[in-house]
Image (tube, rainbow, N blue to C red; front, side, top):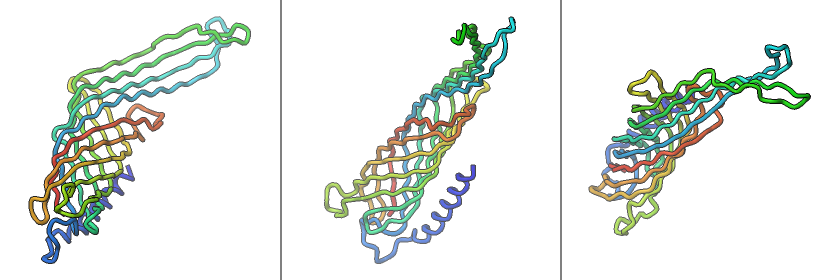
Length: 259
């Protein structure tokens, strides 16, 4: 997808240019967010989504007795997944400004395992007429495939965002408390362990984080964060509607931060 390639190129440029400041300057004050910013998180993620879509084709024809009727051919998809990612990995590269805000890229990698359900159904309906009133003459399932079982998958996200540290005094008890927001593109993919069936989704995401860091040196800190991610699909395998369905993910991360 073109937009993913563009995001990857921009992220690479940001990392390479900002990393020139990775070496601490002698004049840099301790316990302050300035210069090159790097943060990595390691933890647990959970997601649970239920995606359903359908498509219909209608046409007028005649039945076996040469009477006018309307036929409706429908395809229905249902995809459900519930699972965990351990480890869920999070990487941020950027620059801290004014000992208050860090502007950065965001890369997330989550290898998921869990349970999934997949259902594909083809239906046919035939409507006859009594005068001008349509009457259902036939309602049948022409084909159906159902799959459920253990599922292995993954999610890769790439975007940009900001992390704000509102309490700048290192002696204050809330120093290190932060809030973060970011957004970008994500790709979810996976397959059933025992069936020849898979799920693929391209989406946009918005990510919100709240946590706290503690300084362990002049430039490094460790901490934890709680993350909520809202994901809205823009393209899915087996789906022609692409009507913006969304689902959620939750993460708990242990963080190591420089800058």
